[in-house]
Length: 357
Ligand code: SF4
Image: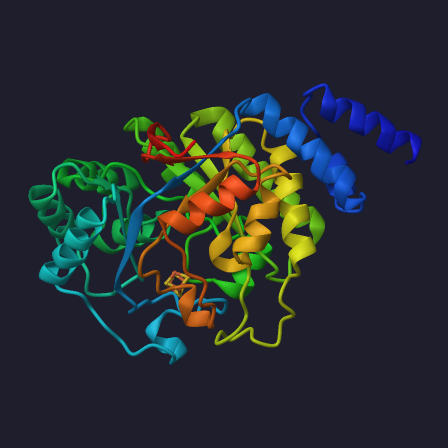
């Protein structure tokens, strides 16, 4: 190790905040060394052996989307899934199966549908809230919020106020990559980085929580990966609303970017470790089993990740890229135990519902 890197390692192990240029250097570190440092940081922010998961259900209620992002295989114009809209009754039937399975969280997510009004969004929420008062509704996205605000001539605050009033508990961050150079190329019709930050700040205004994701492998440089993490760290310093960070590698199949090389497993582990070290103010880092597979997700638990996310019954967006990873409660319990950790089923606020010690 060079002198500079020895100093950086000491800094990491002392729990000090890492600068952007230092974080970029971490990508070239030996993977085991990096993983060990990330696990040490995980121990500082989460000094427990438990790893949580949530029993939830994604309900992708429409794939009609004006944004037509180049990296997305899910929206109807990509041509792989026929255009569809779900009725409120269908949404309720899917929520009912979640409840029967002991699930606690519904994630309603759709495209930027030109005909969906704020009233329709609120109608979906009221129906779910009315039929299932105990279900936590972690739904929609900053992109849908900004789209609705523009379409209806409202402020983002007004849209969130209406959604909250109709029953929304929290909103996933769905941040892709918060680097406008990349966004202009792959998702020019979706919201900008500043608009994403504005939604997060407004959620904070209402005392609501969110998350932050990262889709990497979209043509960004390593510096831009850190730029993305830096946006999240900055907005989290300001608001504290981000409960978890979830990195995903880009899955090119069936998208307009299908000539891109898929990210490797090593790349995923490095990304988890670097994110764990950089995001010193976000407690939970999810191991993305859905895109990376269960084995790799298990390894990530010893390199900085401390949550397995959701069981995600009937996810459609990632499945559209040809990825067929599925799991269930028993499998997640076994995987977490085999990693030497204690599995816990948790709720949306990361409180333990049941321990599988
Ligand atoms: S990523 Fe979201 S906003 Fe972009 S095309 Fe797919 S559904 Fe639409």
